[in-house]
Length: 120
Image (tube, rainbow, N blue to C red; front, side, top):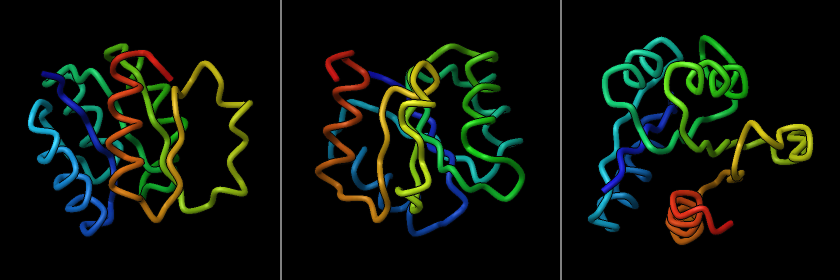
């Protein structure tokens, strides 16, 4: 069982991710609405996977992923509604996968499993 930290300030997106992870039944989801909450959750829970929205109220997702990995090294997935503005090659070595909004539950479950098992 893996702990997943989802950093997202939009409650409906948090609910969707919670439903996806609950269906998987083998993982636990922790949510945070901003960077400060995410840093505290990383310290407390030491997640196996970070799923981080690019556009957060107090920081950008890429900077936050870098900070979280310094607290506790884990795989990371970046989520964004701005697919065209994300330079995936530039993010190589920082994020393991990318998800575009709106989130598709099947895609989310597949990315979680592939990222956690290392079989991208």
